[in-house]
Length: 317
Image (cartoon, rainbow, N blue to C red; front, side, top):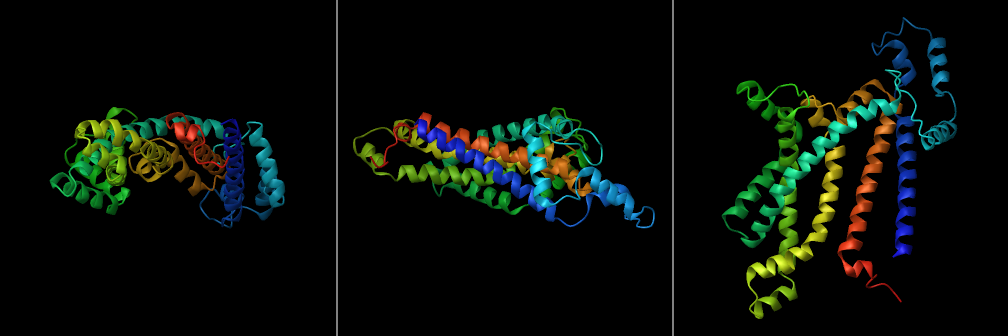
């Protein structure tokens, strides 16, 4: 158990180092010059500034140095807790991100809660009543939810509920009303997949030998479901919960932008448009850390909830 824990921690460190290197490399190779964008004010007017001014800005930010020098300088600063300053606002990057983490977490947790509240019961019911009316309705819902992109469903809901009916604000101000539409969009997108996945997991368990044996012994269906099927189906469902929480945290950029939700996703879109590399790198690293942390906790929960994993069943002795 201790050996597995150490190996997991080592794997986490390796993954995080890989994330820092890949994110820095991709931005380094990206077209465009952030120093030139900053000096020209983003208007592309080539005749108003000199090349010397642009070069001076590159030197100020350290962009004139070789790749590995830039990377290790940046990595060393991060290890000391210094993420640098935003190229456009000159504020510390941690301040830029810190004010956006809260709204994104609120949106993600709310969307995950509603998704679980809807998807798990419906997925179980669809498995119990396979090919019945409810199962067919959920299939249609899943097909539509997966087929319709989030930006389209966001615009449709915004137009109908905010503009036509005037029930909800067009521009979110961070309150409960402003949370309803973005949570609805994220819930539709993920519930469409989650319901089918829970259904498949439960059906797989219901086809196992131990279920047929319990039925032959005369065990009631409700006891089989709650004492056996759901108990064994819970572990893969926990994995799905971890995956979707990461999806909510990192994949809500379009939804946050459309609904003016002041979160990490909207900040990332703005930073990409401004070529604000320190902010982009910090956001990628933050999302990477969250993904790794969630997966680590899911892996740890397996060891705590499943004695076979905790005891290392199946390993060579």
